[in-house]
Amino acid sequence: GVAGSASAASITAYNNIYTSGCSGQVPSVFWAYNTGGTFTTSPILSAYDNTGSQVAFVQVTSSVASLVLLKWAPSTSGTLTSQGSATAYRNCTAPCMYSMPFANGKSDSLSSPFLDYASDTVYVGDDSGNLHKFTGVFLGNPAEATSPWPVNLGTTQLASPVYDGTWIGGEVFVGDLGGSMHAVSPTG
View 1 (cartoon, rainbow, N blue to C red):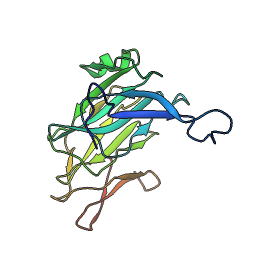
View 2 (view 1 turned 180 degrees about the vertical axis):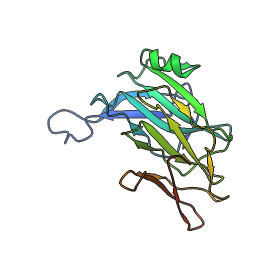
View 3 (view 1 turned 90 degrees about the vertical axis):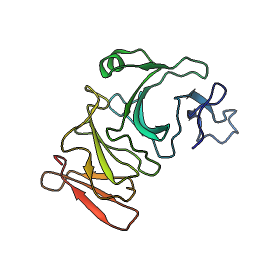
View 4 (view 1 turned 120 degrees about the horizontal axis):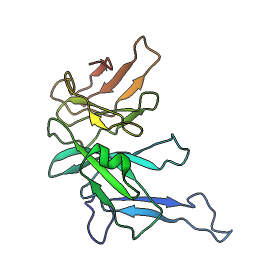
């Protein structure tokens, strides 16, 4: 929840976290980057290449949430380059990132992104009651889905969504801080 700076990373990955210290190995920073904003929710890892070589998370900058995609490289001093387009991100050499501001310009302080690995789609809520959908996240051309997305579910802050593909056609389930549970079709 603290903004990164020139001397402090906003996101950090560790390795050797499950060592006892008796073997001489101790947890250490694997990579760390200042991405230019703050985030308070959980990140998600790509699993398509068995290394988690990409990370996605929601970051807030100047009260506007963005879905950030990050290709990491093991380093604590590497320069993270920000890409200006989805195509540039898809072709960039790690470490690099691409940020997609939420279409409605709202913030997100509670909703972690949920990745449907089968469709390479992320669902995430915002603080004003809207559910967002991003497609092509790790494998395709990343973009936020439009009409009817984002889907307005009221004015209450949304929790983290979950996609259940076992329902006929699938459903995205998300609760809000008002105590309501919502079910949304992936088509909106």
